[in-house]
Length: 110
Length: 113
Image 1 (tube, rainbow over the protein chains, first blue to last red):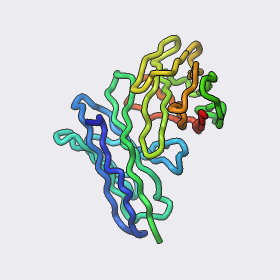
Image 2 (image 1 turned 90 degrees about the vertical axis):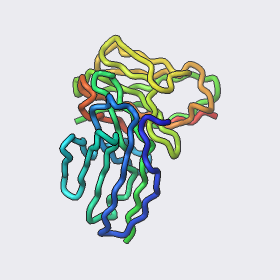
Image 3 (image 1 turned 120 degrees about the vertical axis):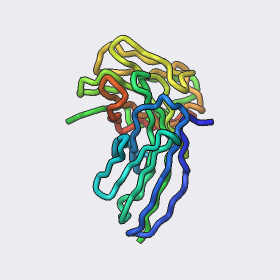
């Protein structure tokens, strides 16, 4: 079993739709969680950190469920520019490294 | 702001040739990482460093060596390139603990024929 698993998609949604991605992790010692965005094999860029109480940044909402060991990303009012691959990242503090999921591909269509 | 700079951006090697990829960061980050990304897959950690003079193996270290002689630089070496090492290589850096986000370079696209 992979340490971090994501539904690869692709998710194809119309503009204005709401879409949600889940990411599960296997190591209960995981303590830090992030969502990154990657465009067309360019470098990943931080979208948002995921906090225990959940957090929101504009149209994006991230949630953490430690009991079930998953994190989620909700995108509201999808824009064409949201089309990208979304990578889930899980870290164990002081372990010195982060583990990436394989990514979920989102395509927003007019 | 330069951030994380990788050189070269593209390279084609023949099987058995060697090369070194250079990563430089100007953010005074303690941690540096080398990842590879193959089509349809996420990033897999090759080697990482938690500080100057230290290195550690990641998930897929075989066929690669690294060095961190200076805090700002992290070198990835391929001693004898193989076609299986055809990939996109990303360098990243972060502050001293992993609850801080990673900052990535633009990537190096390597083809081994």
